[in-house]
Length: 150
Image (cartoon, rainbow, N blue to C red; front, side):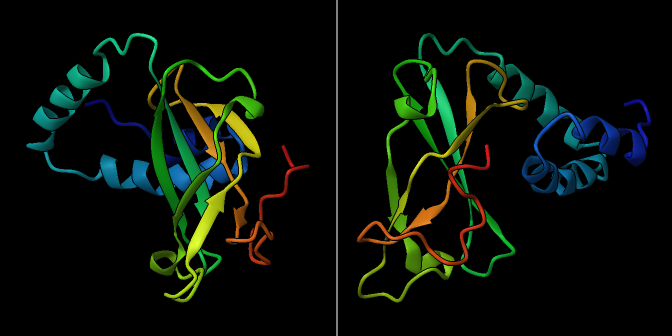
């Protein structure tokens, strides 16, 4: 594998939104430090990533967890490519596992607010940024992504 400097990688990330830079910069550094035996894993992964997916589209919903520092994500498969945020369904999760609620009333909702092309899984797959919403559809105070910041 050819040597690529971290600085070059960081510059290339400037093409993507800042949240994505923070999300994936660490994983690139970790992947670059893997052993030679991992090369086989990369070949196998590439083979599966290049399989045709038909009209199906994977949308990764990304949000900031209850600590305000960690990122969480869930991937949903849709039957067709979403053309706008309005085409994306709302989704829910258990907020007690992400430090966003107590156990008794822990339903949290992901309301689509910003959609980007997925640079890792390629087109037509998407990355979707979300503010976190409580059970009764109130924005959480720690939610850093607002609908107007697209």
